[in-house]
Image 1: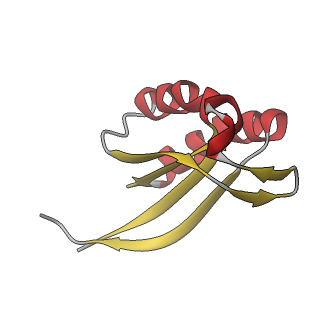
Image 2: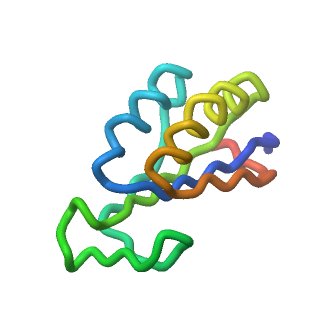
Length: 97
């Protein structure tokens, strides 16, 4: 088993490619994307029934070291401030396979 940082990002679907580019730049090779999520946040209700521009995307990945995590939060924070969304980081244990 390996300690990791689990990173969950919820952001407007239009920004998905930007976030995936950040993950690529810091050499994160694995992630899960769930499109068309809905919910309510400080900017109001988002609903996938209104189309892609008004829906959110959920991205789950892990950072295996502090350098990756620091770079990810440095690059994602300004984007979240600009367009909204959240980024949650928690300690987790990765079961090697």
